[in-house]
Length: 283
Image (cartoon, rainbow, N blue to C red; front, side, top):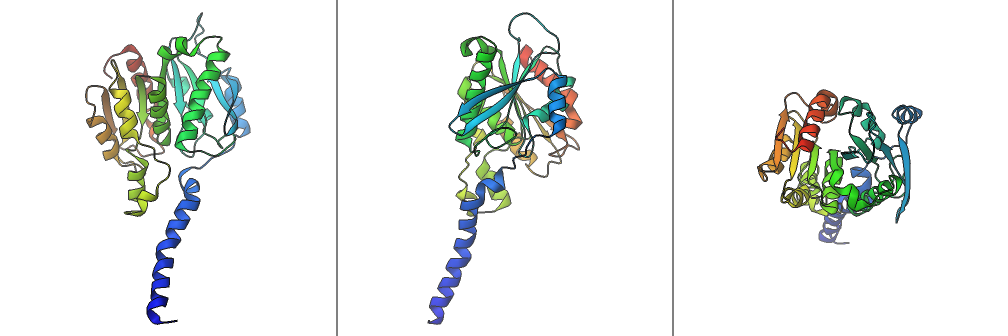
C-alpha cells in the first residue's frame, strides 16, 4: 500500500475513533444513575413520604410525594417539583427539606434508569417522566392537574436545573430556584471536549431556551445560586442566564461554594429564597 494511503487511513482512524466513542458512549459520559440504599427507605418513612408509581414509554417509573410537615386541610399551598444533580437521587433532597418551610410539599422526581426507574435518560424522556409524575400526583391527591398547576414551583441542581426548567416550560410554571445551572449541554461539551467535538452532543439540554420561555411569563420569579468556586459548571454560565432576564431572575454568587457542596453550604438561604419566590417578593 502506498505511503500516502497508509497515512490517510491513520488520519481517518484518529478522527473517527473519538467520534464513534462519543456517539456510542455519550449517555454514559453524561448520566450517572445510582440505585437506592436502605437508608433512603428510612428517610422516606421518617417524613411520611409515599411512592407514586406510573408508566412511560421507558417502562415503570417511581417518584416520591412528601407531604407538608405542618398538616393543613385541602391541597398544599405550594408543592415543589425537585430534580437532583447528575450523580444524585430524588430522595437525596430529604437531607435538606427539613431546613425549609414546613408548609411546603414536594414531588421528588428521578430520571429514567435512576433509583427505581426503568429505561434510559435523555432530555425528551426526562420531560415525559416529569409530566407523567405530575399527572400521577394529581391522581394521588384526588384533584386535577389544572387545580394543581398554580401551586407548583421547581427546584433543581446542575442537570436537575435543566430538568426543572423543562418541567416549568412544559407545565406553564413561573416560580423556581436553580442551583449551578449550565447554559447548554453543548457549551459544557466545549469545556470538556473542545471544538468541534462538542457539536456531537445528542442530549441538547438548552437552559437559555427554557429559561427564556419561563422568564417571559407574567409574574415569573426565578432565583439562581451558583458557587463562585464551582469546578464543574463555571460561575459565568449562571451569571449569563440571569443577566438575560434581569426583571425575572435574581442571581446569587456563593463565595467559596463548589459544585457538590453548594446545597449543604447554603441550605437555609435556599429555603429563604423558596419562601420569597412563593411570596412573590425579590429574594
